[in-house]
Image (cartoon, rainbow, N blue to C red; front, side, top):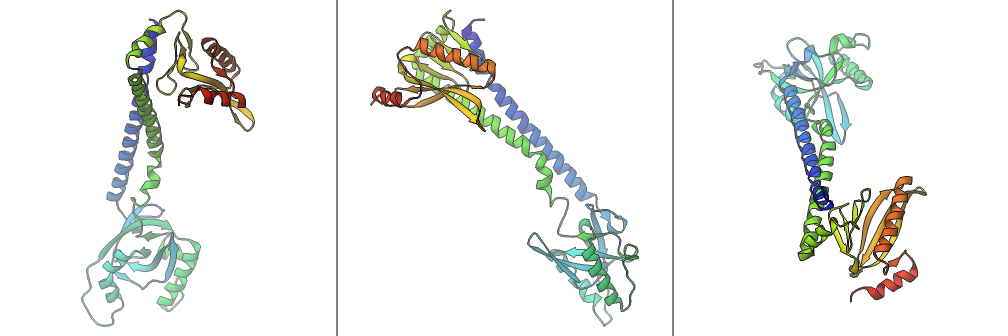
Length: 334
């Protein structure tokens, strides 16, 4: 296979970026679907609150009686009001959001009514269980004993009366879904990165070929010449008349359009990390090419590449100096 065929094959390899990007898209979709399926499963798998003894369980209780709120707390700027509620057998601690509190109006009125009235239907409330913190436990003991008119509840028998968890109706399994979807974020990020690179390189290559007009075949034919130099690490060819780079999409420069070249070093914390060659064309635009990491082997190759540049373009300005910067201005097309 000649240089021409190999080069065209390398240009087509950009499609790998598309496939990788689509893989991450698919991976993100699958991960997201799994999260939603599991969340929906939790939403449909509601446990009776009386059977729950651990936090982060989606549970429900059929409320028959309730008290006024005995504690308030602020969670992320939202006021939580805490109540005692009863089903037919047990008493529980619950945080009621406005919707659930409104649904319990009839039960609240019945709970505090002195007259004989028909008992309203029970109302089912749902939420996530949370471990009862020590400060809420103290408030609950005080409020419960005040309600009872005697000291029935203590820290030692607390769990026998009120268990170890309370129900927070502000939350459902779907509340923290964005946190659970964190498994999807890396896939989305990688998909965006790979697809942007793919479409950018494809666009750059297409525009480059269009600008070459009738010269494209000439460029390809020169690839097969014995005096063409190929620098794999830099993803760059130097043919008889053209500089051809495919490091970030296809770039082709006629030597006659280049007026100035110079190496550029990238340093991190004082240490050399990368080197590139800047090529400045007659339109005064600088183009970064042949970026390589600063390994010993790469630096040797880089020097060889730069010297080959100079041999192919003996009349261009070389090196970044104040003098060359001024001379280059005289060579730019007006």
